[in-house]
Image (cartoon, rainbow, N blue to C red):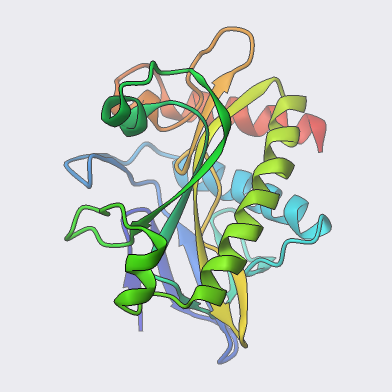
Amino acid sequence: MTYKGKSKVIQPGDTTDTLRMTFTDNVTAFNGEKSAAPSGKGAVCAAISHLIYRYLAVHGIETHLVSEIDSTTALVKKAKIVPIEIIVRNLAAGGFSKKYGVAEGTQLAHPTVEFSVKSDELGDPMINKSQITAIGLATESELDAMIAQSEKINLLLTELFAKARIKLADFKLEFGNSDGKIILCDEISPDSCRLWDMDTEQKLDKDVFRRDLGDVIEVYSEVLRRLENVI
């Protein structure tokens, strides 16, 4: 059985407990209202995400990544995805700035952790912990594990990106249940993070596509180059 998402394709793996995850060139914004497919985008996102996942694994974060098959495809552990997206914010940006009237780029007093329902049909609405457990999207223990891992990932990635002279403004995470354990799934790349150059504030993420600020491949490739130089 094949599942096609907005930017990835999931297919059966080599064994019953694995899947093949392929990064496509598709890039979307505004819940799919804006889309394009710049050549090579899937490969550069795969390279960034796999590099970050290997880095996190070394530092004690269990992920679904098993091995890289080729430049766009990885073998990953099969997991029951928790239908909740976690957004971690270090700086005010995007919808957070608009919703709460906080100027974009404002350093938050402490990182925030938000939840949204993983549903394109519903527009990924925000939801709180009490609502999540009330309607059975996740258990209290699953949420606690997701929050703890998200906070640790934020510390690790903030430090990593700082070495590359990049500010980690915010990012999205997804988790799954594999053999009774909550593990990190999906991807971490400029498609799922807001990344700003530490010196110039230049956008180095999908906002380049959202706001027509430049060439996505050029910007994403710069992020990859910098990370390769510091890991």
